[in-house]
Image (cartoon, rainbow, N blue to C red):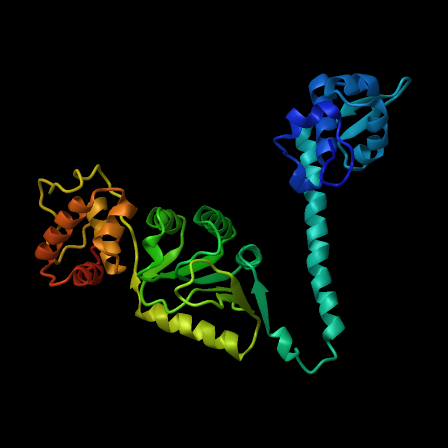
Length: 360
């Protein structure tokens, strides 16, 4: 078995390292396997560790300097050679501190590398934009830009999506943990993807600021310094190519477009009920909605229907997002329109948003 760095892993480590725990700290699979075998066995000779890990003594001997350098093992005095594993909380803390120091040095290197172009009058035109080709390359570039955001991430949400929505949600959770502000505008087609509404609900619960509005294109802007947008047409079923824009007049224009759309958009706040709501399709004992001037929260199902109406979704798309029958949605839409005095489905969602009935 060969690890990711080209070294031979101990033969019996395969089952142990299926679940890598120290990969993010620069510990190879074989090294982690030997360390974990020593943790299980306690102080041991190389022969004993090899037996525990079903590895070769020669392979462990070659690995020993690296294990010591990582701070995972310590030699005990005397003969034969015996090793003891460093307690995990000490070993992991030391490895994490080392990795943080390396990251800090790498970030500092960016400023030094920037001096290499310091004598220029400005960036060359070809450095202001870059073209990314291929679905996988576009997805990687989008994730890189989103994950590097530390201040604010602006997103115009529109299908097709470059990454799986579950991966996107994980990135948003990571960004919010680091106090990155996320503002997203969702267009009428944003919720055509199954599960997208629940994904959005979770993102909002985690801190994203979301609005419904006109979305002429897909766009993501990180920290006002880098933007990415697709090059294909709206009819494309996948994002095959994208344009990455660096600080320039074009980037300023894209940010300005987002801010104009943001001001015109309607806040989206899917409601989480305080108590179990009525069975979908059946009115509650207190009526379908609060009075038209009330700002009390709606039952979750009604609030979700109104939010999706405001997004411009059709009844069948709403049914898919909420996992109910089309007839249930149609029945609720008619009742909601009648109660709100709305002449159209979209108007019902708009009335509810303006009267703050969707505020959670």
